[in-house]
Image 1 (tube, rainbow, N blue to C red):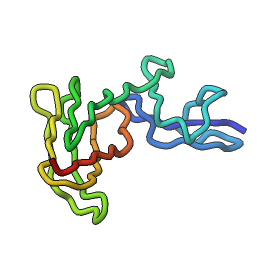
Image 2 (cartoon, one colour):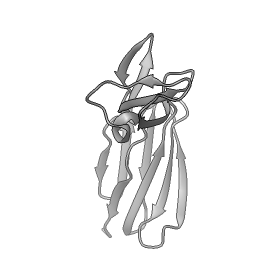
Image 3 (cartoon, rainbow, N blue to C red):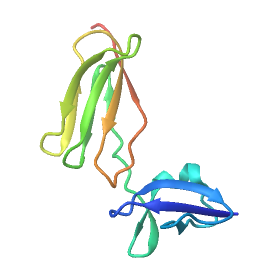
Length: 129
């Protein structure tokens, strides 16, 4: 069986799979990479490399800050219990800075431009002071 991927022009993977024959336009993935893990790779100048990761945010009581983010990064804030959208934070001067005024538990979903790997949801708890 062949483990393969189809990439976009920027090298990010659009589709990956395992089959006896590679689909047209596909490239063989490294032997140790399964299709499920292929989203963290990209192909640049004929080489498989890791896509850049989103920086680690600083999460405090009702606060979320991350610096060094790419242009076009956006964060959506949801109430964890209801999943209601509470607001959107755009990147400003290379960072995203969110202060949550009300007590509660929130989820922050960050969208990053390619080739960055989209991070998992972040949970932020805001306790009444």
